[in-house]
Image 1: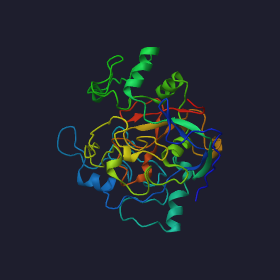
Image 2: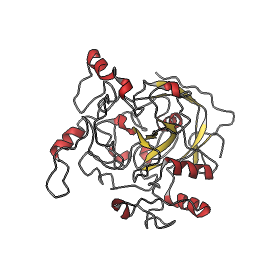
Image 3: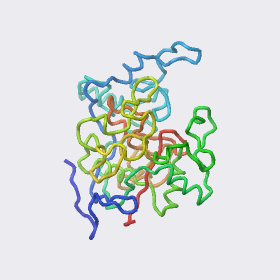
Image 4: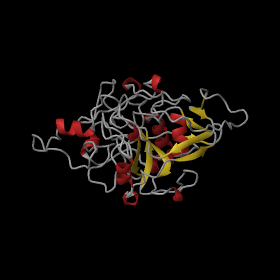
Length: 344
C-alpha cells in the first residue's frame, strides 16, 4: 500500500473547489514507472486485431501485418511507432500481459525479459519508484481551443498547423481560427514547447509526471481514475482495430472537455484518461539517477505523456496510458493542461 502524506498546506481548499479553472491536489506520494496491469477481460489484443484486419495497402487490398514488434498496435498518430525496439517488453512492462488470458510469467521468464534493460533507449522501463508530491493546483480540464486562441491573439505565437495532407481536414488552424464547432475541444497539434509557452503565458507551468499521476490516480494508484474496473463510457477512447477511431463512446475524434463527468478523477479533474494525450514537464530517462525525486527537469529525446487519447484503446493494455513522444512533434492526439504551485 502506498502511503499518503496528508501534509496539506494551511488553508488548502477542498479538492472539489474550482478557482480560475483549477482544482487543488493535496500532497502525497506516488509510484512512478511501469504500471503492470492485466488486460480488460474479453479485450481483443493488438496482435489479434492486426491479424484479423490487416492494414490496407495504398494500392487497395491488404498489405499484411505491420512490421512493428510483438504487441505493437497498427501505426498511426498517438500510437507507438512501427519497428522493433530491442529489449522492449510486451505491453504492460516486464512480466505484464501480452493480451487477454495471458498467465503471469514464471520468475525465470520474467528475468529473461528484463535483464537487457540497458538496451531500451526511450526511458519507459526504469523500475517503479516513489516520488513525493507537494500540494499544487491543476487545470480542471484540458486546455481548450478557445483558450488557446486567446493566447495566439495576445502573443502572435504560431498556430497549430502541420504541412501534411492528413492535417488539412479540420486539424490545421487558419491563422488564429480553429475548425467551426470545436471551441470547447482540447487543443491538439501542440508540441511540448507549445504547451510550455502557453502555460508560461498564463503564469503557470506544465505538471510534472508525478503531479499528473497524483491528480489522475491519487496515492492509491488504481487502474483507472474512477476505480479498478474499466468503463468505456467514462472516457473518450479509440479501438485496436486498424483505423484506430471509435465513435461508440459518442465521439470519433476529440470531444468537448468534460463530456465524461463520471470519468473525472478523485480531485475533480476531467478527462485525465482519454480525449487527448497530455504533455508533462518531465523527460523520459533510462535511469532514475538522472531524476530528482522522480522529476526530470530538462528536455530529453522523449517527453512523458499520460492518459491516452480518442485514438487509444487501453483495454488490451491499461498501462499503455503511460507513454512518450518527441517534444518537438505536433500530433492530432496530444494536448495538455497547466499546473501551479500556488493558489490561482
